[in-house]
Length: 291
Ligand SMILES: NC(=O)C1=CN([C@@H]2O[C@H](COP(=O)(O)OP(=O)(O)OC[C@H]3O[C@@H](n4cnc5c(N)ncnc54)[C@H](OP(=O)(O)O)[C@@H]3O)[C@@H](O)[C@H]2O)C=CC1
Ligand SMILES: O=CC(=O)O
Image 1: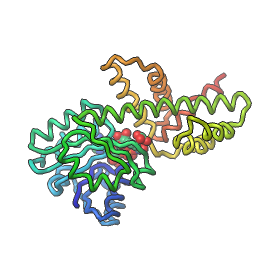
Image 2: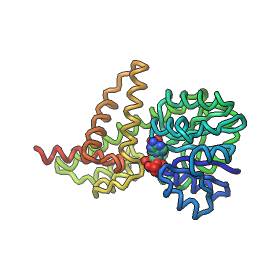
Image 3: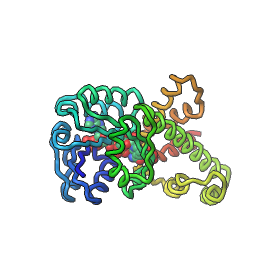
Image 4: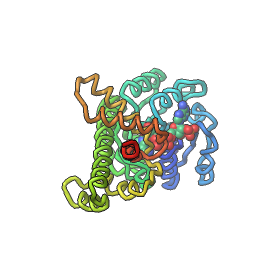
């Protein structure tokens, strides 16, 4: 199967490499074109623009940072839309808001194409090992056509109905995840400042009802001030912001998420946006130094 792939950041690079290593023919594009070199060294072809990739491939996947990037790659000069026509499919796996997904859907279908949103749950390592959870919505026929690729990229795919539902599900999941990370950071800080060993807290948490892979995976690194990015903090803050907007639209009070968003904003203001989202832990250390 041949696919195009737009966006070779942390996720896109791992996902496109995984497709390549599993026998797919992949044509890649990235805004910073030099990031294509590693994929090309492993057998990928390169498109110099998104339009060039669309022209070549029947199905193209995008994995881009945020709504502005997702829209720009479709609508701007040399973008996806310039070459779109009937018989082609576009799958946007970026985390965006439902409105952005709907705008892209309208643009693609106005050219006779098929559109699927398919954001993913799971970070750098699940992307590398094909263990993502795929949250698809939109064109069912394209979903079925893309299943061989989804089977490589993920451990489970959900088809959630109309365009927007995939984005909503992803935002709900990441709103919960971001709030959990803040509660975890506060717990580690409270343990430390009240005279406990935070490493003991990790062991206690891991044996109880709130054990989870995130605490287990990130906790030891956080205690060593290691925030090597798997999920960049700026993207987690974007997801909190978009989830809060979804809460506004639906009159859902979300005080915990709102407080978490403020903590991620504070971390961004401290220059931690490109670090892993667990770096929100650092915002609590600032309080210690200033007291
Ligand atoms: N990392 C993670 O754990 C997960 C991330 N996600 C979501 O996946 C998406 C990608 O995340 P991730 O790979 O971590 O992000 P990165 O920041 O590593 O990569 C972002 C990608 O978007 C491109 N990009 C940014 N702005 C533009 C623009 N204006 N025009 C064209 N391309 C642009 C970047 O290009 P360039 O290289 O030129 O900067 C890069 O390819 C995000 O929506 C994120 O929320 C979802 C699940 C897990
Ligand atoms: O969006 C991030 C993730 O880990 O899922």
